[in-house]
Length: 117
Image 1: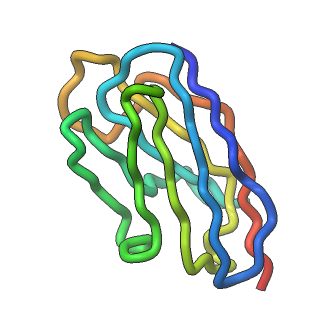
Image 2 (image 1 turned 90 degrees about the horizontal axis):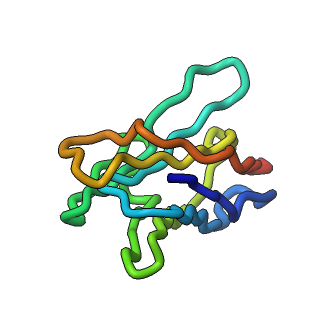
Image 3 (image 1 turned 90 degrees about the vertical axis):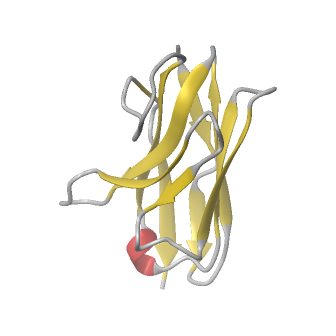
């Protein structure tokens, strides 16, 4: 399965962006990680095949993850963006029969999100 991410860009603090990630095949858990310069990759949010969502504390109330299984796509709506949200965002997914997250079987290329203060 290949993952194709899109939607990154430059936005002012307080603004919004929506990331998308399309999979070439069926997946179970889907989600997003991010890595800021000098930092380790961290989990942002993921959604299971049963639409259960999980968020990092730092993005709760600001980010919303969703999925459209007809399009094999996961979305990350990011609102009230902060400077510290600046990072390369990576989508990830698990094979269809895998249960329990967070996703780690397949990885997409990163998409850069830059939040200006």
